[in-house]
Length: 370
Length: 266
Image (tube, rainbow over all chains, first blue to last red; front, side, top):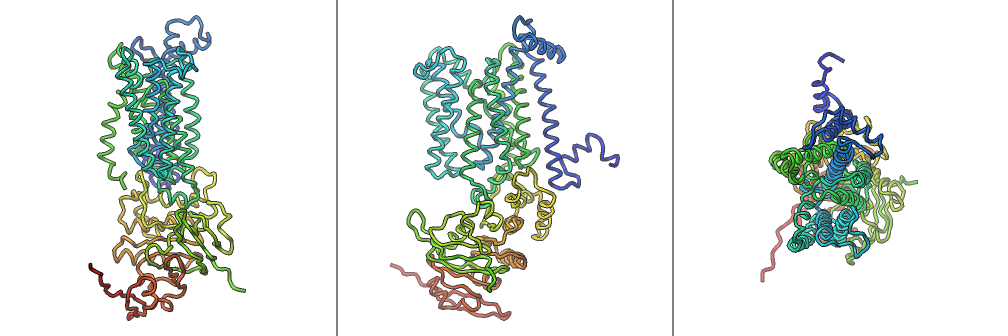
């Protein structure tokens, strides 16, 4: 290798521009780049989540030392620093990572299958359905007709998941009756979402002194995350993301349209139903404890497409890393902008998301619309 | 013994769920290495037949054989390796590039591989050169002119390495020069081990380029044969209900000039 081919800048140029490589070599290099750089940035931001908070800022070494000593103590008789790192910041960082990752992968999957760049993980009505039942629990102590204890930490989460899946199933049923075309999915999702949205509005009006709890959930927050909740989100999100990632090639194929994809040997209707179901279940888990956090699922897949091209074998791993990093960073910002006064993270992601989205429309809108 | 025809359609019958009888007992066969025009008025069963050939629709009765083997028991992937399809138009979402679009033609051969092989890549590169779109390979498909887009779609169907390529109205929204260009590319490809079946409205264009024509009307087969032998004023009158002059130009090519039709006014 000659001298001007060495060094960081040359490597970057080679990865981004190809520099005489074949297409497939470039893709394989980009994949390695995404995995390597994605892992490093994720670890760095994760560490920052442990070190930085409104109560105290620690250096990474003492943060890790506190984490490991707390793990050694198995959770009992911890020092205040250990409690802070182990019981508060660690689960919070895990939850932000999982939700960011899950919403981004779900967004990328929805956009590919529905072939519409403006689609986000909430397009199938999942968020409205989840919100409706979650509000029923928060404001009106709905306990699934006595099936669950009203003190269970899982009550709101299970209500949200159930509500999300009910809305999703209604959307699928309606869309299938309407011919299971991509437009049918979008229109059905919008209509079902509106119905649940209306129910939410009515409940909020009658929620009395619970209204601030309701709004806090609707805006999205990682404030009340515990270890149990974090794991409850993380495991399904990892499993479903890997399942979706397995179908990256097929997601490229459906971009050519239903007819072309099916004449190439793919059962498109079954594939679409599978991916939409997986993405919707994942979205329901993402909103279960943390509420509705907007824009990450819409914007991250687009950022990845701009950076790495349209191939989902690169868009999906890119979304995994970038989604996790952006959500953790947004949560950090939500806690730190006004110390002691936590801002809703959904508002932060939206504030970051809107200008990015507007920029995307400005730059890439023409290219996206056929 | 006769050579096994590349495509054999046997008593094809297709009735849609709504009762529409699109194809009625259609039978014909086509040898390998031909450019075949599929001609007939709108709704005569051309597209339905193409969709039955690549198993996008199930036949109501009859059979379709490629190289002597029925396509009916084959899996969608097996059919995709035998038959490829060029749509009249296609919009690829999300700025998929020309290279990526054509590379998707290799999908049926990928099996469980994650990346396409170097052989796949060189096949795609060669094909892009052959169709004169190599310099456009990193452009988004949507940014190309319709003529270029059509060539990319044909290139994608070509790298699928099919025995039979189905082309549905390739020139429907192209101007005269692009129409001729697309037909030239199809004609050049057919010299290989492949037959191309083109559904098209422009009879003169078909007569000029095609080795054989299959003519259909209201779901029934009217004629199969060399264009000069079968295209007559009587056939045009029968199929389209239009009076036409059928002649031979100075270069010996057949042309069809329709006459004016009156409109019944109330």
